[in-house]
Amino acid sequence: MHDAKLEWMRNEAELFSNQENLHRLMGLTGANPKLNIEADLSKLPLSDPDLSDVIRTALAQRLDLAAARQELVIFKKALFLARTEAVPDISGSMVKESSPDENPHVGPGIELDIPLFDRGQANVARLKAQLSQSKKQIEVLKQDIRSEIRIIHNQMDTKRKAVEYYRDIIIPVHEDIVQASQLEYNFMLLGAYTLLQVKQDEINARRNYILTLRDYWILRTELERAVGAGLINI
Image 1: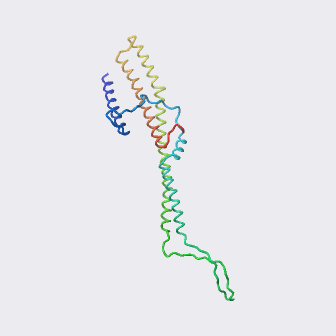
Image 2: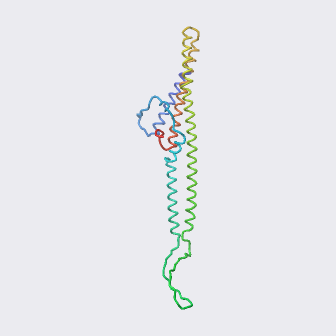
Image 3: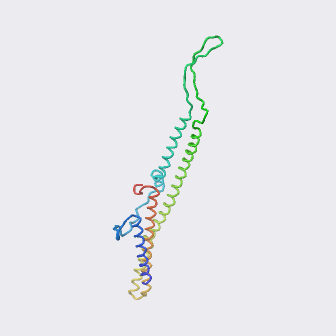
């Protein structure tokens, strides 16, 4: 009983600290800010989205990847303009040439301006390098996104299996043990301390179930952040 009371006191202190941190992060002010939170955790959804669908959605929705792709488009346009400026001026005209037979020949001619100074080749080279680097950064970012999602998805799947094991196996076993122990206690075949310990074991199992379910929802939230979109429609 004393251990249970101490555990309750620790939980109350942790709850207060978590609430204050949440109020601060959400910008809630006042001596007693109002924040409505569901008393119970939501149950497990029937299923989780497939990993390949999650990755595909992330590659389409992530803002950092979209920004990198837009940067690539900008570099492509800048390179096109730089190449246009680097092309020398070319003009056509009709020219008249003399020949040994003294019969002049008239035909088309081309005037090509050969610049004495750099007309932007250095800028073209620089933009080519930036374009290549931008492409590499996009591929690295895509690989990082895939890796991050695979890790979180695997962790979430592990937590789901643990929650299901607590729910379907561990807790029912403890319930049966408590029920049988209660009958033995009623017939004075079991001491009060042993019965209390059995019930405490059941409480601990339910507590671990709740903590594992909490961890699952935290990981699901992290996965939504990594995807850049909700998982409901995936």
